[in-house]
Length: 306
Image (cartoon, rainbow, N blue to C red; front, side, top):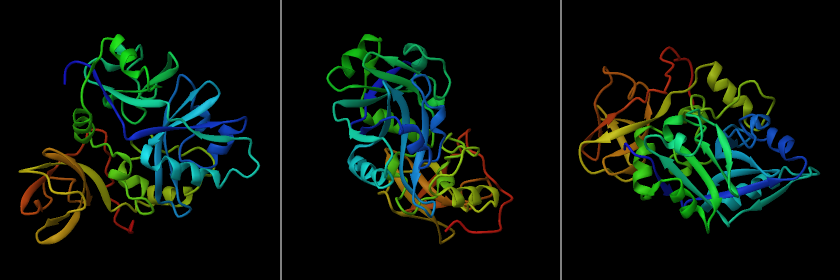
């Protein structure tokens, strides 16, 4: 895609964390450093089980003394409920913001069109909302959070044209970026299987947070045996959840798809080299594509991430 455009993301919602203790409250719960978040800096983070398994992921941006969490709309109430369990006496308020909508802006010059440098996480206020270069990967483009009633005219006024969700979905799949619980399994996925280290989702210098121990152990002991890869099909895509085979043995599982591309959780080294055995799914061939941002620890063979 050569010209920047935008797509509304109806499956995203916004949870606002307000109150004087909002930073310290979130800091002890999520995988990234909340103190780095402001109205000019966004971040990506996850909320985990005490055992270090994925529950929710989101993009954070501060706006008018609130921290907005751009998360899955269908699971927003669950995120609010789980965070509320840790509120205790903290001076915070968790409020769903149905009046806000989220859009993805992508294509050539997306950041410049929004008045932003091409730097992951760079952000600025735009009207009654905010725009930010996606903190996971600048090639993803820009994220916009704006009032639902005006988001289309505001983005159109910037010179952007609207496209459909499918175009955005294909864009992020080709880059190998997971989309919440479509690709990450609550209570099961380990962050480093899904690239959270390379995608700026974990701060290794911050203090303790829920699930930190297992997350650190999987990094420093090299325990990851599976990774989420973008894949290309030789024919129509199979359904999410379909098992993938290599030489007659299970090699992974398909996650979200769009047309002939998708994401798949593959056992290493299935997706990591030319010497890996060919992959098949429902009788069709499957080709993994290693994104430029992905780092693979090929020497780690001393444990299991199950």
